[in-house]
Image (tube, rainbow, N blue to C red; front, side):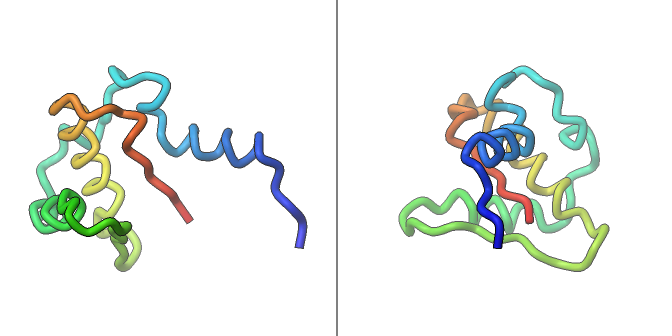
Length: 90
């Protein structure tokens, strides 16, 4: 297995989390109708008493990315530090 260089990892993480470099960037998905499961995901992801990752999975094209981006937009509008919001895509 080939090793992945740190700069390449950093570049990918910054690409998947553009609000780190530009918190004022428009998140297009924020203007879409809220997905049905958004409140459930928000409750799970915002529950900070337990330190763990929240994983959102499901079939293709059901709105997983839209839910995440809508939640990120809300967090940024609540003045959460954008650099504390991390999305990892597989």
